[in-house]
Length: 319
Image 1 (tube, rainbow, N blue to C red):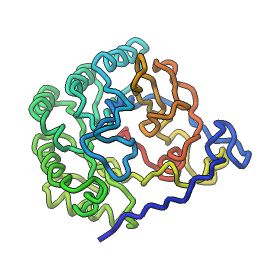
Image 2 (spheres, rainbow, N blue to C red):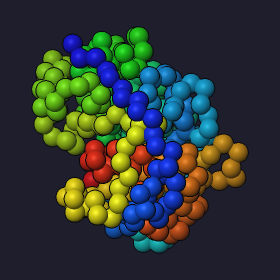
Image 3 (cartoon, rainbow, N blue to C red):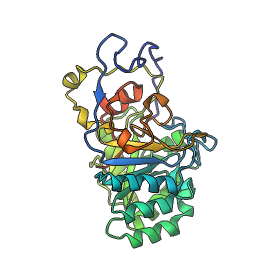
């Protein structure tokens, strides 16, 4: 039975300070927006549970990101239309998106305009309470539907609940099986914090999906997304312009090359745009209020940029 192991080597305080230069004096890597393929809405940072290590610091008490309203989403959908932007996918994350009372209406607006929708959820009580409205929405938009990605931190109950808390497995299992029975396109988000090889993890998840009767191919990285564990205090390397060739990775493969995220900070008059789903709080990454303002290159000036995207090769979208 695997156990979690967090390496909390303190972050070198000289790193990730200058957006142009690394601590060693080299040119910091940056990523240009190649095409806006996924626009994310962070529906709010409140969540119904508190995880041991939440990427978004979400919890039942963290309201630093206020609930977005339907009017906010409609405004950005209208900007997409009027500016002629080709944005095929609209994503919703949090917090727990189903805690936002406007989520179903937001999904309806997205689908009515021809976008695909992706919701990241723990599939627990907040989703369960909206299942009738969610099912009706899926029936109405039968051709496009809604893609749902459920957080299952490990394929064993013990490890999942080690991260998410006692009693979190059963409601998640009930939720994901209901989604599958309703015909939703379901995928899973897991974590790689368990000191096990990727092929071992994928085999374990496949056995779980088979036991649940889910038609999910866990060898497909779009159906089982394994996210690297992140801690902003860990000492991770900075990414220089030389790293693209050294690591054999492409800037246009990074999440911020094709994504942006809308957030509403508590106390702000309106939403702002961040480069990706991982940086909702850091004001250094504020890209303005409009999508047309958010085309500037993103300096990889945060530990998450290095560990999650460049070194981890992870992305939240499915496009």
